[in-house]
Every structure is written in C-alpha cells, then in structure tokens.
Image (cartoon, rainbow, N blue to C red; front, side):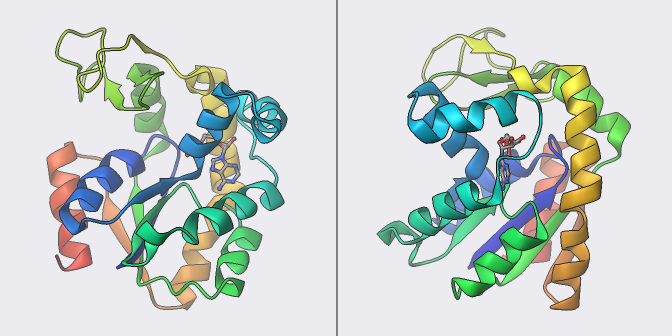
Length: 210
Ligand code: AMP
C-alpha cells in the first residue's frame, strides 16, 4: 500500500507512520528525517537546507523532489511505503504524479493549532537515531535518554515556539490545499488526531482498512 500522511507539524504523522509501517512491513520515508541526517553529515544539500529548516521555512521543492525521487527508486519501496512530510506543496504533489507514483490513500491527521503548540513544546528527539518522544504523552523511560539507543534527548531547534507559529502558518497556506488536491482524486481520509496516540492509531488503521 502507498500511503501519504498529511497534517500540521506535530500532528503525530511520524508516530502513526512508524506504527502503521511496522504493521504493514513497509518503510516510512520522512523527508524531514532525511534532511536532518544531511544537515548532521554536513553534505552540500544539508548545508543548503539548514537555513530554511532552522527558520521553520520549507526547503525548496526541487531539493525535496530530488530526495523523494531517489528514495522511491530503492528496492524496499517496491511493496509500498508511507510518506511522512511529503508532499507539502501542490507542485510536490504534481511531481509525485509525474513520477508515476499511484498513491492509494492520503490520511490527514486533524489537530487544532493550540494543541500543536503544546505538543511541540514537549517534543524531544534523539540526535543519534531520530526516535521521537514527548515529556507528557510519550515519555522516554528515564526522561532523558533514548529508549532505543541510549543517546541523550534534545529539543529540535525548529520546535521553538516562535518557529512553530511560522511552521503552522506555512502549513495552513501551503500544505493544507493538498487536502483539496487529494479530495478531488477521491483518496483523502481525515482522522481525528487530537486524542491519545492509541485512539488515533485505531482510527488510522480503520481508515486504512487493515
Ligand atoms: P518535519 O520533520 O517533517 O517536521 O520537517 C522538518 C523540516 O524539514 C520542515 O520544517 C522543512 O524545513 C523541511 N522539510 C521536510 N519535508 C519537506 C518538504 N516536503 N518540503 C519542504 N521542506 C520540507
């Protein structure tokens, strides 16, 4: 199955994508995670992308389209995949269509802006393996270290409150129109992402029919 998770930053796309990916044995492709890796490794792409990312702005379409084009051509994507954080603009969605990728379902996780701001302030990530936690909703076992690899957890620079506000504004102006784009194709499903993680997972799996 080929799935897209849409939703505001912090809506829980990554968390749900991870659960569904394991259930369906397909990879999750997160453009944000790929870009963060490139920033850490100081590649040319990472260095160019860092300024956009730190400011809460979108990385230019041609860069992320290139990332996705290359990633989807890898063998593990043959049996399906989940896209988490791509597409984020209509031109990105059109590029996916032009690549001949036929998406089965687009899940839009719906969470109010106020809840997003609260969630982002408590989000903690592992710099080493990228695992994501939340001080209140998904705490790490000892509160400070990654449950998976033991590295120290930190806040993402782009989760700072003022950056979150601009990321939300970009979501509403630039990414949200994708709901209409995929609604017109008849493949959009909306899921309430406001409750507990397990509630959202149940709704997500039901929407996928798995
Ligand atoms: P995320 O981890 O999905 O919240 O992405 C973090 C940041 O990476 C975003 O705020 C953007 O700067 C960049 N990014 C990730 N995916 C995309 C995309 N599809 N288009 C443009 N920029 C992106």
